[in-house]
Image (cartoon, rainbow, N blue to C red; front, side):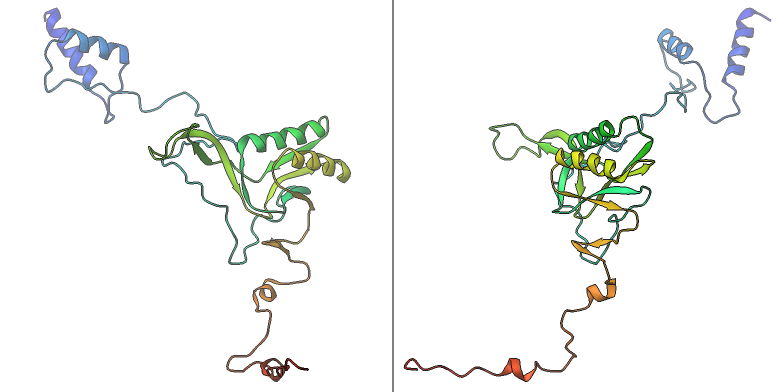
Length: 247
């Protein structure tokens, strides 16, 4: 058997594979494709390896893992109109910082400033800091003196929509309460809005109403208990007598 026949048989054995997509070194395939002048219908396509050893870059609480498929609108934070108290109490920590004035959109840089302030104040202590929010909303803006129209603008920064009475930071560890209060006070001064200090076991908040001694059924109940089909009391239906001008 000639050397040419042996090489053709070896080539046929190389093409055999038990998987659906044969895996070959990329360098040999690229060199073969450059040497061929004509492409036949039995030619092996350029195949990449179906896996990668490169670790994926996971996102953080200030940077999402995947980019936005569609540019986010300005929007408004969630308003619990149905009486929801989600996110207003502590889950993991013993002390927390909760927004108490108004809902707003806080940028990732402002959240980072608050986190750094807490870490600097609690430096050298044994604690764990929990973040309850995530900056996953893209903010887009146009330059100065740009006419109206021409699209939404370019990406500027990441932000988070924080509703009123939302817990932002939680701390757990062997730390005195006054030290944590001071850390949250410094962080609140570096972030927009007003914040309050909460502890484990504090009642939830619906909107701006704290559930202290009141249940959700009582909160949703109308303020005046007037049965259906009845009119107002006689004292409220009577019209006061008119006063003459000469009296």
